[in-house]
Structure formats: C-alpha cells, structure tokens
Image 1 (spheres, rainbow, N blue to C red):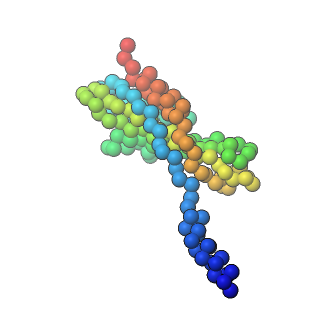
Image 2: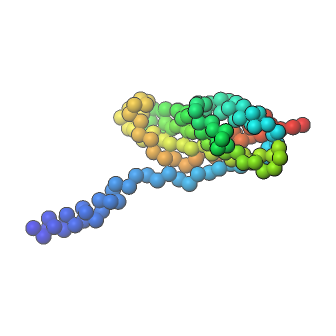
Image 3: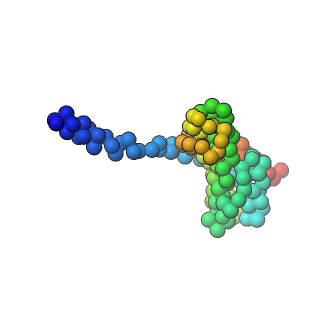
Length: 149
C-alpha cells in the first residue's frame, strides 16, 4: 500500500512538468533604417519583399498598426526534424519625416512527425530558433528597393 502511495505522490508531483510544451526561443529581430516619403510605397515594397522571398502574402498586412505578418512558407523533408515552416514579421516605426525604422523577424518551426513527415496533415510543429539569415535577406531586399542613389 505504501508503495502505491509513494508512486501516486511522485506522479502528482511531476505531472505538471510533463504537461509543459516546448517554449518558443526568444525572437531575433534584424533592424535597419530607410528613407521613404510615402506609406503607400512602403507597403508596396513590403509586399514585394514578402513575395520575392517566397512568403505567402495574405491579410496580415496592417498599415494601421504598421505591421505585416506573412503566411507560413513550408518546406517538408522526408526525415523527422528536417522539414520546417517559416513566417515573416515586419514592423515599421517612423523615425523622422521620411525616415523609417524597419524590424524583420523570420519565425521558424520544425516538423517533428516521425511517421509521415511529408504529409502536412500529420505535421507536429515544434518551435525552432528564428532564421536570422533569412530575416537579413528580407531586410536587405527592402533596403535595396528603397535606396536612393
């Protein structure tokens, strides 16, 4: 009887820890500053950068909040943990008249499904560190489109 009570005690003590999921790593934002006199040009450039970098553009562009969030871009692989999906976050902040601060983050999840890693319906998405290199590419693409020579 005591053995069963001890097991029950251990089970109840560690149950809350077993339920904890994987936590998302800290976001890694890449920043830059650009000159642009028109918000319309800013948003068209944002849309073009998302398309050029293979991010789905949807209803995530919100000029009222000065943010844009793409849809998920998927890249499945035949082995567990090698498939992934990425989503781009872009934030704009006015620095001065005609000057803007750009912050870009590429959020990444990996597919940990072992039985059907190529089938999206079975995907088990787990948080992965942000893709800083891809965020740099998006940032540089926007900066190059808005550069004035």
